[in-house]
Amino acid sequence: MTFGPDDRVYAIGDIHGRLDLLDRLYRLIRQDSHNEPPGRRVVVHLGDYVDRGPDSRGVIERVITPPLPGFQSVALMGNHDFMMLGFLDRPAEVGPGWIMNGAGATLASYGVDLPRRLDADEMARAAGALAQALPSSHRAFLDRLVPHYRAGPFLFVHAGIRPGRPIDAQDFADLIWIREEFLDSPADHGAVVVHGHSITREPDFRPNRIGIDTGAYRSGRLTALRVGDGATKILQT
Image (cartoon, rainbow, N blue to C red):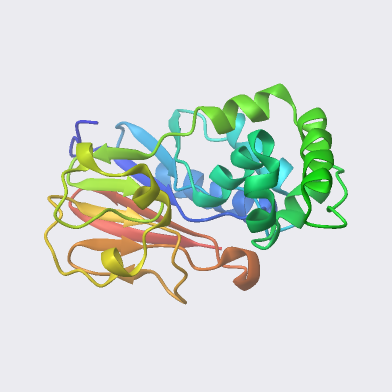
């Protein structure tokens, strides 16, 4: 995206099933954008729509139907969303790890019982039930999630990037899973990387990156970062 002086991008951190907070944050973004000069508006969701919080289904449904008139909506892939997709296609392989990372809340939101055991038969049963309960629009949403988005001097990803590697040569797994190698790096990435995935109590501003996962599912603070006009601003529930 070319980035004009009146353009604004609002990046939203990890939602994790907190539809209540997402609705509140959308209202804050709508109010904030009314005070800005006319220009292009984009809302970038940094991934992890599902797991841990109570309404993964509702979050996906809300993001599918953008509630911000006049905004382009971009949805990035998070590692939890990737695990959900993997569970549908490879339940025995992916299921146990996903279950250990908060999948029970997602299954419950679709009316699916948590597997009683972590064996292949139970994983297959639960995956089949989820596939039946999952609206086709939700599966299509998960299938079309993108790994990154660029706007002017900012690169938006879920987890981060591998330092020293061009964005077009990044490994997909790093974009949704990386932590310390990225978080601890002082390297110039060629863009300021805006990311979620790694929880901090407050937004984490560094010269080469900005982290905005404030642990909404447990803290009640869902964070958005507004960039544009050479400045940044935090909006938060």
